[in-house]
Image 1 (cartoon, rainbow, N blue to C red):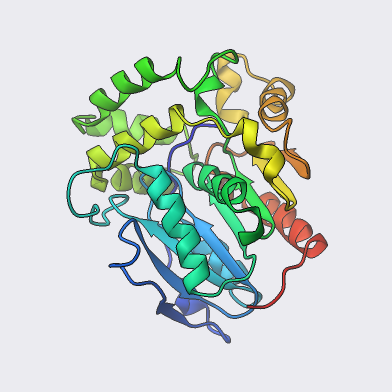
Image 2: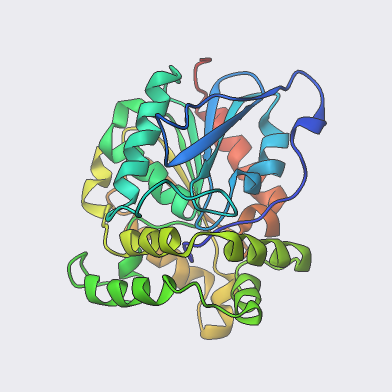
Length: 302
């Protein structure tokens, strides 16, 4: 349940068929991100995790581009994308949320499916609690509404601030050695090639942007507002990476259940094998779960 980033190779447009790719955003209007549009059909917005570009969703988009028009987000400052001009805002994520909602409006995307991994899952929830009518079904991959309460269930946004501030100051240096960065990535994904890619994306990310995003995650608690969410939500969690530290599937699921307790329409499923990057470690399971969920909750075409 780490709220970090993801990895992914392969160019999506090569899949052929009726798919197409284009840029749909105005970077001047949405400086917090860019968007690549691939495919045709009802809209689907895909938001990556911390330090990851939109390429993290390449395989997912290849699976869905014949059924959905996929709007693939790449956040500024992550995975080699240039950071937004000027100093990093404090807070950062509220502006990202608001610009994503503005993007849905300007592109006339009517209640799209929103798929988010880690930080992207948090943002997907935040879109819905802010404007419940703006988005459709949510698919949340290994993400929680309040990161600050994972280790201390009694934590609040206020009590989490000192520790989050210290972490932000440390992360701003961007001084993680390559071996340590790879070790961190290896805790989140199993395949060695993907470990390398995750580590590279982390190294290519802007330290100040990453640090502020992590601070915002630790000090923003969405749990009280989950009752505002109108759409069905599929939450896909992982636990295998924490087994060496005493975690079980049941104990980890209990954390998810506690954090999502106020969510009206929820389906929480736990991967047996996946680490944080469940779309890579347990691909068939992830796609089967998502396919079944989307079939049960279809969305209208744009």
